[in-house]
Each structure stands twice: as C-alpha cells, then as structure tokens.
Image (cartoon, rainbow, N blue to C red; front, side, top):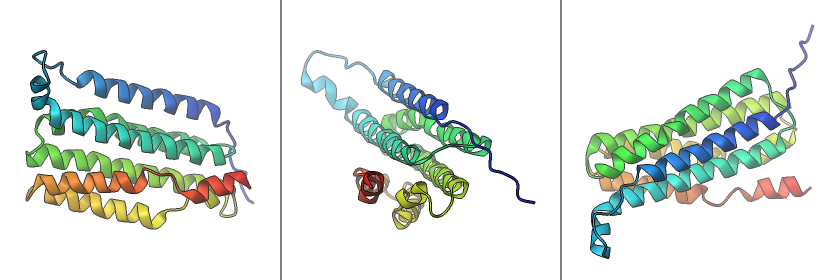
Length: 198
C-alpha cells in the first residue's frame, strides 16, 4: 500500500526564509566597524572587511534568489522539507560569523578556511534541499525541470574543498576561488526562467 505524500503550504516556509536571510544581511552590516577618521585614508584598514562583507552579501543574495526560483516552482512542502530548509538556514546563519572572522584576519589560514567551510556546507545543504523537493514533487515536475546546474553545483563543492585546503598554503588563492564560485552562480540559470514562462 502506497502512503500519500504530505502536502503543506509553502508560504510560511518562504516568508520565514526571507526574514532569516534579511536578518543575516543586517547582522553582517552591523558587524562592520565605523572608520576612525574623517578622510578616505581611514577606510584603508577596513578594506578587507568590506570586501569580505560584499562577497558574503552576494552569496546570501544568490541563495535568496535561487531559493525564490526553486520555491516558485514548488507547489507544496512536507515536514522533511521544512527541516531541510532549516538545515540550510542554520549554515547561512553562520555566514556573518565567518565573514567577520575572515574579514578581520584575511590572510590567516584558519579564518579563511572556516569561511570556506561555512560556504561548503551552505552549498551541500542547498543541494540536499533541492533534491528533496524534486523527490517530493516527482522527476517530471516543474521543480525538477527548473533545478538544473548539477554540474555547476558539484564543481562548486570541489572548488570550496580546494579553497579550504589552499587557505593553509595561500589564503589569497582561497579568496579568488570563493569569488569564482560566486561569479558562476551570480546569474540564475536560464532554464529556470524558461520553464517558469512555459
């Protein structure tokens, strides 16, 4: 006997996720220190922290954008998907901590590696959530059609692991790899927009 899939409204999940992501961005900007001086030279010591903040802002924006597209295609959720979404939000909630630590210690191996570790698990959590949604809706569903970029997702995970290792050799290479992954995901997949338009 086949058990029917649980169908819950997705609206509360989406609203809660939007709120948490807004708080994450707010916390990150509040962590930035006010310059000690009234000229542009006073900004120089803050440049690493500002650049790390900008990168993290882009990352959170990418997750928000892709999450939005994915749940536009979803019709309903389950209790399991609610927990997997919280799993993603847990890792995203650590982004401000990792951002602040790496921004203050941009050439130190452990903070740079920790930043990559958080990004890695954000990526893994998002992948798990996307696969659960596809399983819940079926392989012929709109969710399945719009969740492409499997190769890009796996490549990103490999680049995160590489960047974490490089943090102990050359932290600047790690930073470049984090930027490269963000650039790869900056523009949403075109197949999402095409599938939603059909």
